[in-house]
Length: 262
Image 1 (cartoon, rainbow, N blue to C red):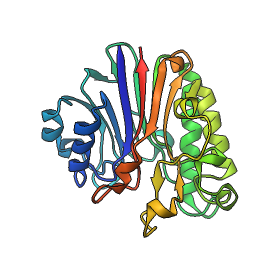
Image 2 (spheres, helix red, strand yellow):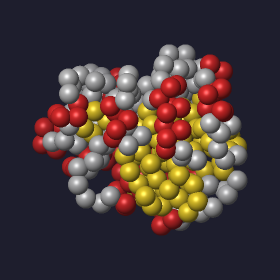
Image 3 (cartoon, one colour):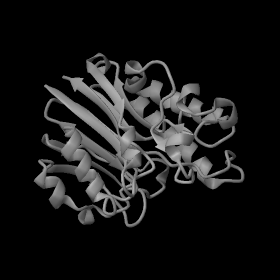
Image 4 (cartoon, rainbow, N blue to C red):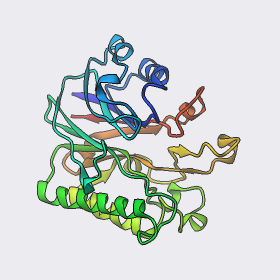
């Protein structure tokens, strides 16, 4: 079985339902993982998605904030959702495909503006969230698992537009990168995107603040697809759909894709 998976921080699934439908129609991934849906589950606009063949969904939602959903052409069973760091946020949902693969969809806290938990509670919450993810992965000993989502960290020097300027900016600080690496290692995950695209600048997010985001190109790779080591060699064809950042009323994130032959 071969299936293509995409992950996209949509920044309001109701506001941008037409963009989701455009992606599903033009790119046709078998599975689409959305973050920052900003909607209760029962308010997600499913009619248009169903019409395009995405008749299966697992999701966790809340009004106006956070929210994660997995839309699928393939049958998928709800495999739970964890409230790491006890924030009361809808930031994780898992779904299991019929081939035994479990997909974990995450929206890791952004962490606020100051990379100091003593003065910025949100930064502490981000680190605690990653720590609890790490500990859960250690205990679970994951197999046949794919982790995707907006992890709000760009770990590599070539995952940001200027490493030196970004070293003290939330999303690229040393402590965040260390926490993310520990989480990845605990789950036995391989960074599929960088396995396929090992060199070169690569981004999935560009700020709304830039008047011309494309020309300025001050991006960060905040959105990730990982696979456990037992299935990582089955992954290929990774790409970022940069054009989606330029669609009308876009999300500030672009979708990231990978295909798995399993």
